[in-house]
Length: 590
Image (cartoon, rainbow, N blue to C red):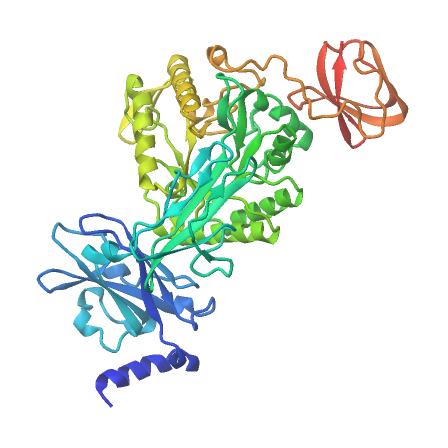
């Protein structure tokens, strides 16, 4: 037996007896072209890879230069790139790069213990014989993307369109077949996948049209086109926003504080006057667990966030919160998994796992909801993540966290937005956040300094509002209320409204009035308990002694009573919330 075969047999014996039955294969999903930095992404396909043993293995990437020398990547001290239990790996192949042409890579799947005493600088492709498992991937970066089939193209760009719009898809590849699904499943592997035969699809008036499609040419598949269309619900007025980010810790409560459902209802009261869509950043605490159901009662659309960090406990709590929201029966229109994960240091494999978890939770309910993610403008999106998304949200803050002059903020926004659209032409893109602080004075950021002002904030809002409404841009403005709980002084002052639930004076000529904010979704009477008279001048009466709490429209408790009649003659005229035993109703004081 040759030395090579002896070494391979020895390595196989170190794993498990079943390894010899199926050889692992390294598949490359994406690699940046020559001259571009970025992450190489791939997967080891091997039946014997499990959650119990995956940490015993790694991937080694060796770069082969044009003159024949080899370099292990990313670097000598971390050349054993980890994989997850599904075999996925992500390698920063441009780390410590120098300026010369490097077209070829070889990716090896290895047993970590085989390399425990080997320095990364000594690893060369010609020294790898017998030290790898299965079949490595030999990639020419110049031809990798050129030879991959092109993805299907829709007749109408995914996004918000008129209800009833007809959609067809086509392939740029001659002699190819398109495989597609309309239930959110993978068209390469799903039992529900079909061959496309020039049929058309119609965007419904409610819900969404979701088409996932790939081009198949021979045995090769393109990257998927994950295409989502939703009927555009035009704002009722030119002074109303398309969408609004909503956090409700407006009286200084710390994040993580439990707001009651009654307080959440009160603080949501002005929102329907300002927008048709609301976006949240999480599923638990500060009233977020109630927002979706309350918004639906207000005939609002919802984009519910599942906030993802590197804390497993916190992430699992977010998933539990989503399950509770879905269990309540009012389903969100869209779900965004993660917000600005690139800034939080959340790796693609972590984010991808939670996107999968959210999709499984939705599937368990037997429903279809578009699932996406949100990150800052200019962030490098992993191809691994993009293939999992139904939409992509971008947060753009020109002139706030960069050195754009005030008179160029709006033009920079439009230019950046158009650039982001071009990055994913076959995917729905949302402008998930934009805005600028109205107070806080001078502040510094990495690379410059800006000054917050009411005039600057008002001018930016007016430009964005007009542009978004005239061009049907799915723009979610940041943010409904000021957030005094935030530690950064500037970040406290992005709100359109203050802690009294009133629009700031410098925005009042731009936004619709909310002076007549009545809580129409709360019943006039509490269940079967008659509260009378309503409206009331002096006293209210109930058939029997009851526990009664009275709140103002900000959700603040004013008085508690246990009685069958209450004297309200000293109360100011206006709308109050009254909780009779465990049931909430609305009371009008004359």
